[in-house]
Image (cartoon, rainbow, N blue to C red; front, side):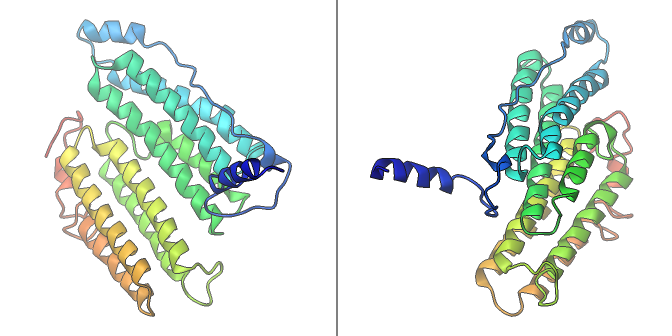
Amino acid sequence: MSTQRRVKIQARARRGQVFRVEVLEARALLAAASETFNPPSLAALIQRARDGENTAPEGLHIMLQALQTQLDSGPLADLKAGTVNGSDFVTEVQNLETSFEQNVDAQLSPEFPNCDKLLKLSGQRIVADVTSLNQQNSVGLISDTDLPTRAQTAIDSLTGGPLLPLGTPLSAFVDTTKSFEADLNTLVQSLSASASPMLTLADMNTTLQAEAAAYQADLDAALLVTHPKIAAMVDSAVANLENQSNTIAHAGGSTAQSQLTDAINAFDTAILDKTGLFGPSGIVSKALADVNGHDAD
């Protein structure tokens, strides 16, 4: 083998699986499919919108249902069949979502910027969700059997909620945040010597960053267009949590676990506590009273 060819092979290997190295199996030799979104036409809805009718909810549902169906029949079907591993599954989802965004722009931009952005945010949240699930799988927090089930739930949420592009109730934000915090506490516990799996501080931080990005993408999909100031508060709290985790992970030390617990508690205070963003005395319960989806902040 020539030196040049060997260098090329090594370079390709470095661009491969980031989070774990698997035993080389036949299925790992299959490349991720170059998924292309097959779009429904929105022409009739667009004409009705030009005539003054609010067709946004119908258009959003049609496009997201199509994306959900094609994620099920493409990337998720490949994952369930074992023809791709977790990383290639994520790549297939990314490929399909990129094609989805391109079609959304082609049909809706620049005439309908809000619908255009809502759809793209919904697509981006699925990419963030499956990326987080794959990272959790790579460190042993999610089994190979559980990964497709969790991915199915994430994909189904495109049209089934609980977080929706329009009209998400406050309870959905509360429940989603509680679930996120439960996962964070599991991560912190994974640093204990008795934990199974027991994660290194670096793996814990990488996983926390992926889960935080997914949580932020989920909430942005439901808030960024209709309630941008609320979304900015969520983004700020997530950024603070991510920065603290990075700092703690890089510093190391015997108190890392307790420091991370304090960081999670600070996030909870900002988002879920009595006067936190989604708390019972917080500002969102009043802001989201506008059921028409207009800015209430």
